[in-house]
Image 1 (tube, rainbow, N blue to C red):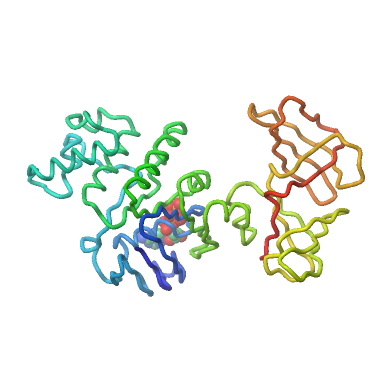
Image 2 (tube, rainbow, N blue to C red):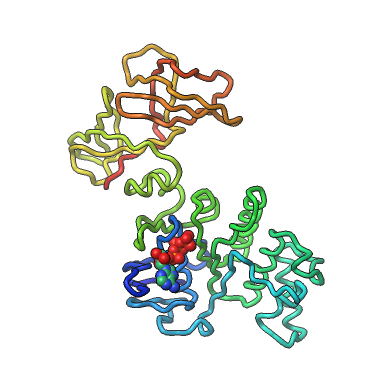
Length: 344
Ligand code: ATP
């Protein structure tokens, strides 16, 4: 539905988007995720036609729209600021897109979209009489009323408090799935991206670092940046042994484990270990061992910092009933899940 081919966007001598190519399939929600300044908003604005490319090609619905102005692209955008008209009621705000004169058909359509976002009965309220979450839903209804091929969301939750953020993101995802909308969604919040996306495009320094589903990115990050940006990761030095099939022996300190080598050559490598994939125990064995340096109780889990020969490890442990005190010597076991070789 949306395709970028070698797109570059420069502002003077700043390259905001540096030769990126990707596709967003129809009926899916694709997130542009990355730290501040990585180029995600610029990418969204390039889809919308609010910015024009310096080089490259953009297709929407199979049509080359590279030089088409925003008004000729079949997309609509939901901004973080909602951008509702304060002097118009909810219904008029939603009906504004298709008809400034407020004809009957436009109002019927606006009512239908308000129902979709769960705001039946709010048509006559003014924006100032709504909560932040409700205002954002009005903004979504207003974008839906245009029935665009692609809906664009620019950090839609950033003005909401933490609890509401979770609810509104669930609403957006439910709506997208039930109407099979094609959505491009910008956020810098990796949890939000994992929760709502079919696919995530991770950006770093104006380039694409990795594209994949939430699980793929979390479990098989391609590089150090992605491993660290998507969730927490302990990155430890290891030695990859010779291999023939997909699996290979990896030496971590005094223990050897087996991992997918993911195309890496035998020799020094890095392994990303998720904090919840490290199991600590008081067992006395000769495997990998360490000493608890810090222990913190966080209600649902314990967080530990463990000093080990392979480096300092950040550990998340669901067992809050039998916490380990700082100073305890522990055996360290790695679960099969959440331990991956980082190829580059
Ligand atoms: P944030 O999360 O902070 O919004 P972002 O990933 O969306 O960041 P962009 O807004 O796309 O980043 O900006 C990418 C780079 O391009 C930044 O270095 C930014 O300073 C620069 N940039 C963006 N817009 C302009 C502009 N109109 N003129 C000059 N430089 C710009």
